Image 1: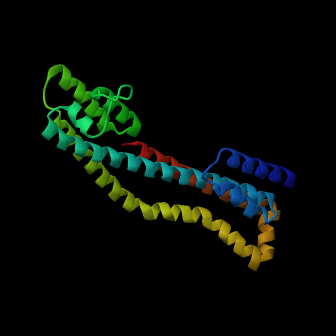
Image 2 (image 1 turned 60 degrees about the vertical axis):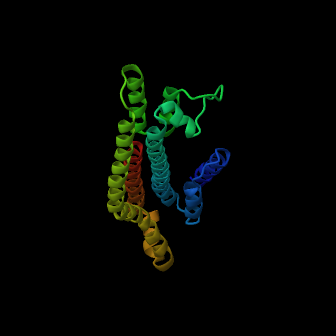
Image 3 (image 1 turned 45 degrees about the horizontal axis):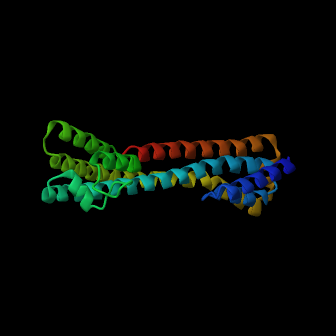
Length: 234
């Protein structure tokens, strides 16, 4: 069993190194857990660390989506201002620095807005792109649509930020509760070796340790999926 654990850890290190992963929580955590010399503890710790890595990746995704949404809001606010002065979407985009990729000439508004929608994946930018096509075909003013789109992003960001503030303490508590049992095991190993030995050598204790890892990893995985789903909704 020990050889299998060492082989798995070696494989993880090679994988993380070759893929240039930004997360080293799992291999480093397993390396620390290997010092305990218990295969059951390593399996339990590994289950929890997988969930923790998923949660950390989800928080980075959420931060990136927040940044994309903020960039879209600034773009729409600036575009609304330029529409007032220039009158046409093409000139406003040109003043913002957008050019046709192939020729560098006056931009095609539809192409530019579609590209920006695909870059940011923010719904209201797609709405503005669709509205610009309708204005070209049927006439009308695009400026009110752009202004309302910018305001909608602002309102959504404020509501989301308030909700995230309310959820921050709960998220932190869940992460701490998932990681805390392993701190307790470390304390038991140093201060009450007999109890620690009972947990990692006897059948009931091993099932308990493994169950803690599965539950902790499951909770963190569910939390990661929730954060990622929330980050995708923009």
